[in-house]
Image (cartoon, rainbow over all chains, first blue to last red; front, side):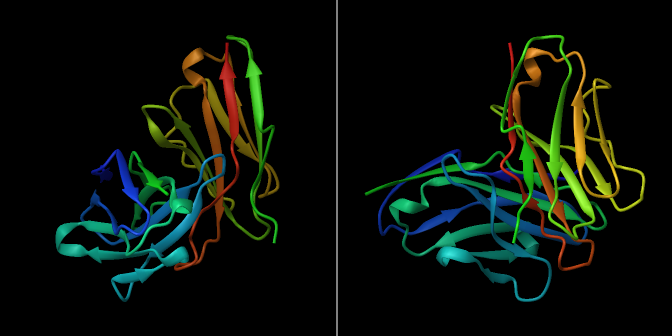
Length: 113
Length: 115
């Protein structure tokens, strides 16, 4: 069965620090990979996605993620975080012809001003 | 354009009562999904509709849960004889069918509290 692991439950950073959130998945075939963000009091929004092609994907608000197939990883990065990035971040995957997403448990990011 | 909408935004019910939650997907999206978000369990898939195909019900936690999609658009998730462990935020998402466009867009959710 597919699964997604997010290594960090809660990350606390100061503004301007660099961010990397880990995501590993288990699935042997072709996968689609996503990062979603949930700001406080808001609904899930898509940050970025990978279907095929260039494994380095750029998303909104300066976020990027790199798909490393050999490591089954899709880590999220941002060079310099802002207080407004405080949110919960979810990595998700679906594979092959599967419709639904499998989500990681989420990483809560707190950015101190 | 309009996103996925859900109603009600909040629902408080008593244990044993039935509840209905509604989802209006994005116009033109043929796929519709229900998920549940609860503390400790994260985001769990419940059920998936794609066009006129039989729904994928593999995520439904018990036979108290059911969903239908009328006219290929609006969907209703029904929970019968609610239990306290059903308390969660119920999320709906929709997507297009075509490869490369199957990103799921989520609604704001219905927060269900079973007393």
